[in-house]
Length: 261
Length: 358
Image (cartoon, rainbow over all chains, first blue to last red; front, side, top):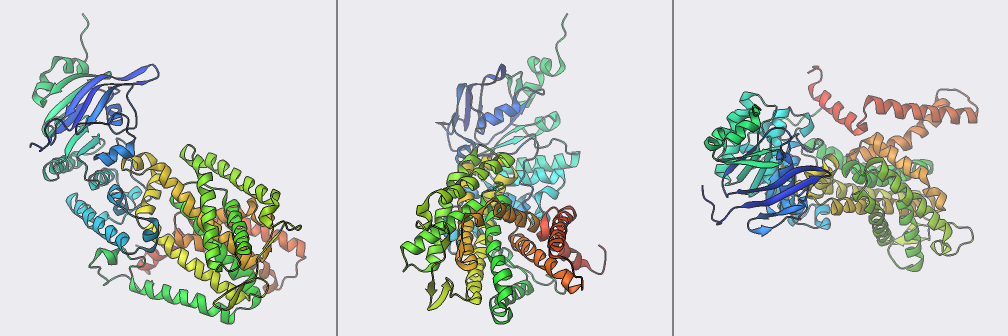
């Protein structure tokens, strides 16, 4: 798949992040091309989640810059990053537990809702119309992810696998250009993983959404990603197609350890 | 339930998003509201209106306001009494400075004033959460009451230090002041409550309510989806304080007639907070139930010994009243920490299946 925009969708250029004395990321550079599925892998503590947090604006790098669709956005806060068209899910599900599934997904539309307090208060005219329009859009996503039966259930009462799916739905509702998934399949059984893989590929296909995901299951990574980036101790050690990365000596060393003789 | 939603299929999202999607609910609620407007003024005596129903409606409005802030937006506040005082003193200043101003407009402007003060004291909420925020709002409570005590301008330099509701008419009927009858004041208070309850429901079921609840449930996830914490929290403080301000103005103008700052001390803040907790955090119905519980139970307890034929010394009865009241609060919180609104919901779900267990 090739997007219309020339050049990469996201450029991370020499980014370093430091927590006190710990260098969580050191000079990491990578690009995300429009339309691709990029997997970020690496051993525990390699800095994968930190990388996502930098991209979504929770941390700011002390070195390097981040460009999205050609514009520099190194210093933006999370809500501004969201407004640019980047959505994400979290490693340990971060749903709004007290709200229904429907309301959770509707929050994904908040950035696209306009309004003023008075019209909202009266539930009248444009306020009511936009509410119904966004509801119709959200229902499409509900259909797409096959969660019709639980739309009125409070999110906190759902089993884990479904919560992950609802979180994906919430991110999708924002119609992001770039979707960041932090371990979308962690703690799932084989069947749930297969479902999730299918959804991710379908999202990539049908919504034309670029996806960057962190995943530990190598089988999944090799199957669904166009490109793989490997992090270790905050450094990027490999970048290539799944086949290339699989044979890369540095990657094998990072995962299996190096013999010291 | 005597009736169910069976057979009521919705064919549009508008119908699905109605406040009462079930036809019978709609009819019952409409009837209930009409009855609330018509029946008490016709049948209730002066005592019931003045000592029970008027304070109940006013407290319900304040509880509604606090529930928007604490129940929906998740910002714990102990400044309710202070914000209500702002409303009351602003209404007093406005009503005496501009005697021709319609009293409802005065209430609205008083609410706006309280909203502005609310925004000011809501600013710390960007940095602090939970109990620490509660302590910060406590500062609002003490500061505001101190301010109204200290600055004689707020009471128009009255030597007594009290503010008195001036007589005002609306549509030719005396609404406030000593000549206003209880039924009239009740109907005005109820009208305001009904309108504001509807507005609150509209706010929480839409854009605004979702951003509030998102901030309450997971602030990090809320930010990543595009909710701006500062704007959202301050708006919650503003709207909540607006409600409390109007309730405070009503407290003086429609209920007490005249008041000093003592009427708005920390006890009031706690009272409204209890209403919200017992009624149910994050529930419009809960705010109303909670206010009813806190207002009605003491009255019930006062009258119970008499009806049981017990003649108790007054002091002893007062003690027992307090003890039973406290025990009841604890009992309800243990049985259902999510409040009366949740009990009501569970009851409805159980009745749907009755007489079968599941």
